[in-house]
Image 1 (tube, rainbow, N blue to C red):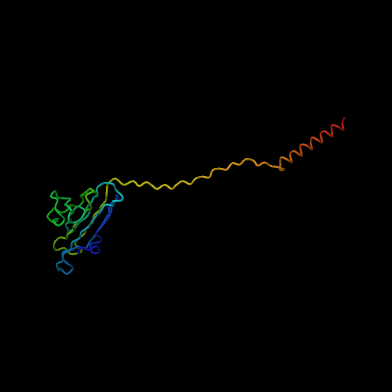
Image 2: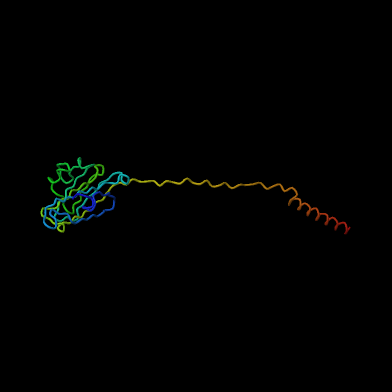
Length: 192
């Protein structure tokens, strides 16, 4: 059965917020009791553009009538056991003890992604199984500096010298002053 649609998803990207996943319906026999061979694999990868370093965590929050095995690595052929000290390849997963519910399983992000294999117990029907897990990252984030917009140059104030007012206000003032002086002189001559 190991298809993305039938397993409820297959590939996930982790971040610093725990994300839940749940799935029901995996079985070893169909509704009529005929044997079938269901199994699902799930990959949880770190986002390389978000974290410098850190650890991915995986926790089974509920598992009923199934066994789950966890590996870490860049691909299925090079993946090693996370729970076992033997470090077996992914194909040898069932030789290890299954994952424990409620336990956190860490993997250094530099080692690749988390890969989980889930296999239903013998004789289980679709309504007999339930799987729930969470995955997240704890690590140092890459600090992205905001792009600064170039500052616009402010226009310099233009200072202009007063215009030489040939025939303008200066001339009018000169005429008024001359007129007043003429009136004062005329009045003074009349009094004498």
